[in-house]
Image (tube, rainbow, N blue to C red; front, top):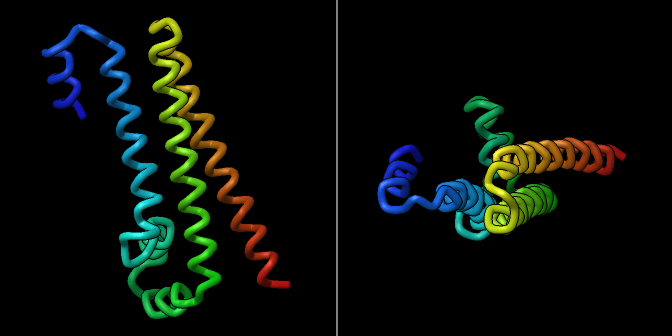
Length: 136
């Protein structure tokens, strides 16, 4: 990221282009969430879940992921995170070229915090909802 910033700074004096770089990284993360549903052995949400559980839980996690309803929940979660990140990047790119660059120094980080907090809160509430639904 630092090398890319240095390269961009060397070839242009447009500070906005440096800010676009951050949006591109967000687009890549969003696309990774979405792409993991179609192109990976297990989606990104399940991969993170597996990392949190540790190697001793491998057998039970493999059995759970074989259940279509479990995959459906994690796929939906990946879609929400992926789309959320893509929307955030799109909004930031529009703001980069429509508002004052000094104001953007405050707005861009706030947008990221609001997006990540909203996605995390949604995630917690959705997992609670799903657990209640399957426990009933």
